[in-house]
Length: 263
Image (cartoon, rainbow, N blue to C red; front, side, top):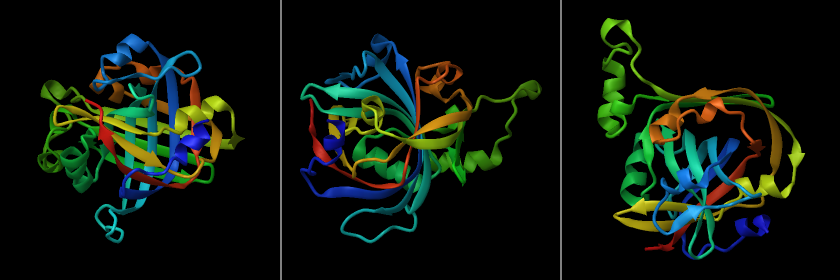
């Protein structure tokens, strides 16, 4: 069962530990052939409830630790907005492959690219919660995403309009939902509880194990969902469609550890 997947013991010491808060998941059924072309070697789209799935997730990381060190002030809190594909590898491990993780935390971007192979991208990302209403927003410009230090300076110095006053492209995503009652149906659990991350790193496909307690999952109602961020990673128009699933996850602690090399 998917609940048991979260409790699988880590095979190695955790490399990072995070407090996960204000977690929003929106998922869409999608063409598996389209998604397969975006995935690392040795993985394929995971078929859940008869479909392949792509998701937008957004959350706040707090109290980040890199054991055995204490929480880092520079990595202590950040908003992340991601586009991810549900995956399964040749060993049967069910995870996600991130197509992008947008955040404003430059140290996290540098560390993730160098050590993890996870595609972090510099963006203005922020979150807000009022009662049961949770909102996340990320804005980036595609020509400034490759180098976070230059990007941070460019965002301050470069105008937001091009020749003739036309707006420069800004890959963005906004989601605002209202959390509802707790749900425990198998599909909700399967979409949110994944064994780890599949990533490309140094021409290899690697697997990072993810562990957390069984999640408290809630239904959610969408108030706003828009943006062109999926177009930046080859999935145009995704946010124009009504999601097939929208969920909120209560705060939890997430640990990541090395898994192995697939190929």
